[in-house]
Length: 527
Ligand code: NI
Picture 1 (cartoon, rainbow, N blue to C red):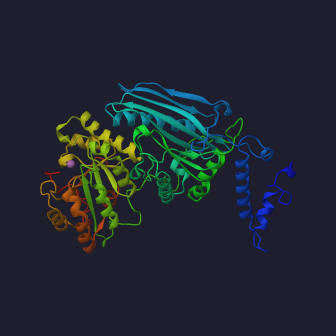
Picture 2 (spheres, rainbow, N blue to C red):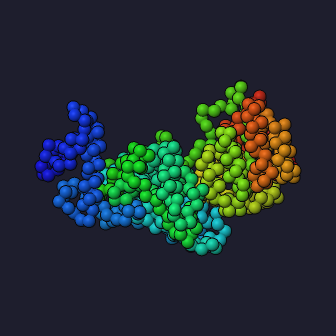
C-alpha cells in the first residue's frame, strides 16, 4: 500500500521527485512547501483521472463528480439518518412550503436553518405586497470531515412573476457554528477582491450589470466549490441580471481563490472535494457558539470605524444625511463622498429601494449607513400602530433582502413623531434620527444655496438634512465637501456620530459639550 502512494514515499513516487529536481541545487525545500506541492500534485492527478476511477487514485480519497459551474452535491443517502424538516404553514395569503435537512449530530445547524427559512418567508412576504408563494428546498453540498454544507433553493412568486434564489450555509461540526457563505472568505478586503474577480469573469455575460455586483452578504450568500476545488459563486435570478437570464454563476479557479479563503474556507473546500461514504458527525456540538465569528462576517459592514472617536475633545464630526432615495444620481454622490473619504447616512424609502437595488448595495458596501424612511413617506403621527409598523417593517425587509443588513436607525418623514411612533420604533430596534440643520434643499433647488446652508449650519455634532433625489443637491456635494474639509470637519455616519443609540429615542444632534441632551432643537417642518 505505501509503495503505491507517491505522497507517503517521496523516493518511489513519480511526481514529487520531478518537483524536487526543479529546485535550485543545494536548496532544501521546507516541509510546508513540500506539503503544498504534494497537495497540488494530488489535485492534478485527481483531475486528470476525472472520467472514472483510474489506477492513480485507487488509494486516495474518492472525489465527487459534477459540472464545473455548479457546487458539489452530496447524495443524502451517504448521510445515514438525515431527515427532512418541513414548514407548510401559510403566511397570510402567501402559500409556504419549506423544507430543510436535519443531519444527525448537527442540531445547532438544524435549529439555525429553521430560523433562517422562517426569516426568509417573513422577509419575502413583508417586502412584497404582491407575494403569492414561496418554497424552499434543500441539497447537501458537503458532508465530510468536520464540515456540512446545505444549499437552499428558494422559489418565489409574486405579482411580478417567479424567481429562484440560492443560499448556502457551511456548518463547522466541531464548533457548532453555522457560517454564511461569505465566511469562506477571510475578510471584507478578500470579499472585495473576489467581487473584482467575479466582475472580470462576468464582464461579457449577457445582461449582467457590474454595478449590481457588490461585496455584501446578500449578493455572496451562495458559494461553494466544484469537484476540482474551484470557488463557485452563484447569484439569484434577477439579482445581477434580468430575471429571464436565470441563475448566474462565476467560477474562480482554485489557485486564484486560495489566497482569499479563510482558514474555515480551506477546510470547507477540502471537505467539499472528497466523498465520505456513510458520513457521521464525529463529535457533535451541543449548541451554537454564543458569539459569532471572531473577525465578523465578510459582507456585513460596520456602521462605525472603531479607530475614530467623535467624542474626543478635538474632534469635529458631523453627519450628512440624505433622504427619500436612492435617486438616479445617487451614484455620483457616492463618487464624491469616496473622493473625500467622507461617510454619510441614507434614509431610504420603499419605491426607490425597489427601483435602485444596486445603489442600495453599493451605498452599504462603501461604508455608508442605511436608515429606514418608510415605504410611502406618510406622516406617521397620523397613522395607527399597525400601519406605522408596516411602513417600517417593509423597508427593513427590502433592505435586508438586498444587503443582508439589519438597520438600527429610522427617520420619520417630516420629522413628525409621537409616542406611538416611538413605541413601534423601539419595538423594531430603531433609534429615531431627526436633524439639527435643515437645508430646505427640496424647496430651493440651487446648488450654491445648498452649499451655503450646509457650511453655515455646520458645527461639531450636527446632523444635516438633505435629499439625494434632487440634482441640485447632488451638484452641491463636491463643493460642500471641499469647504467642510477646509474647516477641518470629519463627515461620519449617524451611528459613528452618536455612538450607541437607544431604540425609540429621538436624536436631533450630538453636541460634544452636552452629550446627554438631545431632546431639544431640531426641525418640525420640511423634509
Ligand atoms: Ni423625506
